[in-house]
Length: 114
Image 1 (cartoon, rainbow, N blue to C red):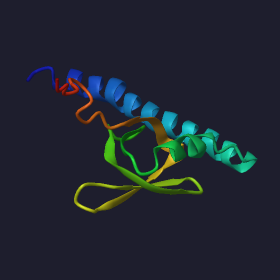
Image 2: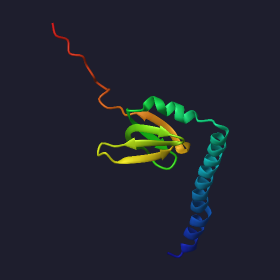
Image 3: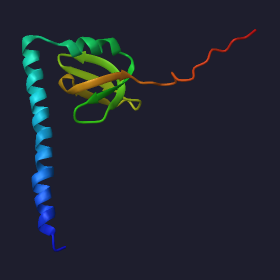
Image 4: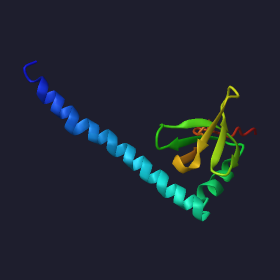
C-alpha cells in the first residue's frame, strides 16, 4: 500500500473524465433531438407506430433494454406494457434501437400430415 497515491491519480485522471464524457455525450444527443423535435422531425415516432400491439425490446442510451408490448405512442413517448401488466414510458429521444421480441421464431416447423 505504499503506492496508494498512484491509485488515487489513476482514478482522478482516468475514471472520472470517462464518466463525465458519457454524460456530455448523452446531453449532446438530447440537445440534438430536442432541436429536431422543435423543427417537427418525429421520424422515430413514425417508425415505432409499426410496432403497436407487438412485443418488442427497446434499447436506450442509458439501459440495456426494456421489454414489453407497445400499447400507444404520443408526442415523443412510447408506452410499453410487460407480461405482469405494469406499464413503462420511454422517451423516443433516447431510443437507439427497437426490435420485435424473437419469441419461438427459431426452429419453427410446419407439421405435414399425409
